[in-house]
Length: 203
Image (cartoon, rainbow, N blue to C red):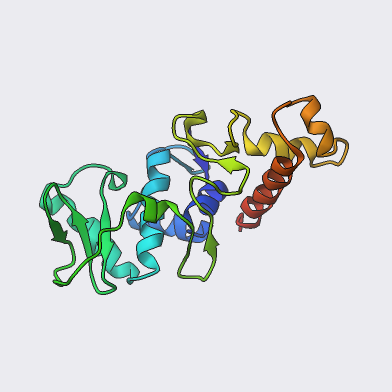
């Protein structure tokens, strides 16, 4: 599954301009970078959430240096495969048995779990970033379902399918269940709300 820029921005906390700049700078280059417009993989989303989470605590320069130093320590996997932490001064990565400082500034660290990165947080621009697994109460992101594309909770129905269905006003939220019996009007409202957030990040 591939994710367009605006949806990537909504799910990660990065702005569209940041995504473009970070791709040009080599911080997080989309795995599907040969496509235009730019598309991101699910692993890219997880890595970008890590960057935005770290960015709320430490400078982007240190994050860039940390990511650039990964290969020097024979850490060659996609950044989504690693668990990072920060004390506000440096960035470390958890190896098999210890933290490794990636910016050469020793300190004491609390392990940042993937759950920390997935839950809602406030980014550097003071934008509240959605919970990655639950961008809305009735929407969910499950990498085993639709490649991680946000769907109505408990279904395989993409959020944007529902939002687009009611967009022109010909079909009401209550009438959606005639087409998708398991989609409640509250899920329709959440799909529309999230679609508006995604569209609002287009520039």
